[in-house]
Length: 254
Image 1 (cartoon, rainbow, N blue to C red):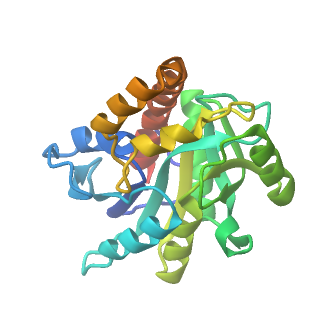
Image 2: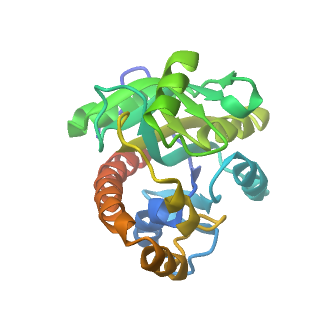
């Protein structure tokens, strides 16, 4: 992919941060050599760069705690916050990419952070080149899942946001504090009208890994949730395929 005119990005050390194991598994496979450890931090070569892949676990607190592990003598020069997000507008579909031009932290009274302009524009150009549907706007990060249409509508109105997640604002704060370039690129796994059953939060542990035992127990107790889980799983997997294309293209371009 050709670089943007007037933009020269040559990062040799890149960190890629996500909450859940399923959001970074494609990166582990793409590393040289492939990483099979499933540890929270993996370091390897990718697209001619040294890449640190960090699984933070879900939520702002875990994210802030885990980001300190990137502060080494070979600290990254830029950080990509990736993963899935919830749409806050009706025109944004599952599988669309969200490239945040502002990140608001709902847990800190809406404190705002901004990405690197060069990374932001490069991410947009990658999506255009691949003909991936994308939207750019404010993403708000919350401390809990925005599970209902009412919660999503409230966040959209309060922040003028197009999407919601639970980690990106803390990644942006860390990047700002440490003088590291940052951008958030995520894909939509639930639309503005999707309702997320609160019970589903129980099947993910604090490190962002699915708990098979709890999945089985939950559906033995509440089999009515099975169709909902299958529907949400399909949407999540669909969004991850788009995420992979966008992230790998961006990595090759910086």
